[in-house]
Image 1 (cartoon, protein in one colour):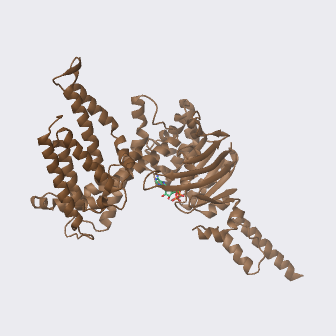
Image 2: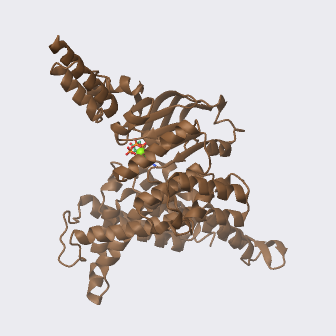
Image 3: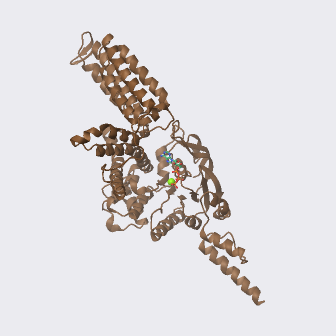
Length: 272
Length: 289
Ligand SMILES: Nc1ncnc2c1ncn2[C@@H]1O[C@H](COP(=O)(O)OP(=O)(O)OP(=O)(O)O)[C@@H](O)[C@H]1O
Ligand SMILES: [Mg+2]
């Protein structure tokens, strides 16, 4: 159940995607997100689907493992699609009740929104699944370095991000442990109405927060004990370097965006 | 009250790259009123094994029977099982959450659906039996020392009056006096309340002193299962898997090699003392003749 959240988890495998420079993957993810929100029409959607499917294939991460992450957001998906379905005005009205209505635009919108969200989760979790948190922050830090000049604390932000990412699986594990410990004392997290359910979360959340704060304090102490004092003058053990594959990937990603835009201009139907 | 494990296998993260087979083909029968020690190197699957006994984790394959009932049956009452098989986790202090210590101990019995009076009575009894100072009952559990928190957590499970009590390294991180107190308490409860006790421990001395039966885990399988004497006789093999016999076992073997006819099966200091004194007396008697 709680372990099904795959966002922020790394899946070790020996694939081309895993070996890419993290900056390439960050760039690709950004382009991918832009493509997701600018595409229009069935052709563009087809291109994005092919692109995503191809990369999932190449990453050697089992598809089953990726879809697990989706289970966690099913509720969100349902809510957004229902809202889109019922609240979008359109030309052809199939059903109307007060201010609620189902229209042709509403149907298209809700389908597209659901697809976008699912693809968004798949795409971004693909990045975290194939990139270790360390690489990811390394990539971010290097890519955002120019911002240092206008006093943005790039290193601190990157460090915070990597710690946050690293803590997700730890906290999930901890949740699992505490849940079990309370269940051994007869706690029931499943049955009851909403209020009872919310109440039954107290024995889980309090120890979880306590341990999160304790961990944060311990980590800060451990970092200081090893003389960590920010990014100033810190060198890297493995500096990032582009290889041949990385340049090719940049080309592929740019080509992909061009294709999606061309498709949107040529065949903008059905429109979201 | 017997618990039977039949060919139990268990893997963490089934169907992913992180799959770890934590238990391999475990067959065990735990009888009423036994005092069992489980030993094994870190990561040998001890904690995983005991979490099967009250249904917290579900075996990947194999069956578990509690009093002849299959606990994986659709209509099996899991809640009742958890009230009968009390489990104190490793580092149980991490489960405290209430505003006062007393309320926290009440959590278990309250979940059993008992009335308020009985719940409070049980909490009071449980806190007293773990020797917790009464002046602190209504303080926040977060301000206690590690050892005190441990006692509160153990009391939280005792208050449910389980028929089988399982403790996962209850003495880790306690001082020697605290350790003896907790173990004596457990042993006393085993005798007086006639409950089954399963104790996971890394200390061979503790295990040898208190339990009647030892289960040795090695990489997810049961390596030995027998009385302390039988198991510690294999001390050479135990060493190969990162374990050891109690100190006195080594002393007895050395004395035996030096020619003193002592009992090699002594596992506790008391037994060793008896045996050594006896052997010395015999030697003396022979010399005088
Ligand atoms: N929640 C979990 N998720 C994945 N793997 C786990 C989990 N808990 C334990 N394991 C793995 O299962 C194996 C057995 O672990 P277990 O905790 O049962 O060992 P143990 O004998 O209790 O060790 P210790 O003496 O350190 O408490 C180990 O290899 C461990 O890495
Ligand atoms: Mg353990």
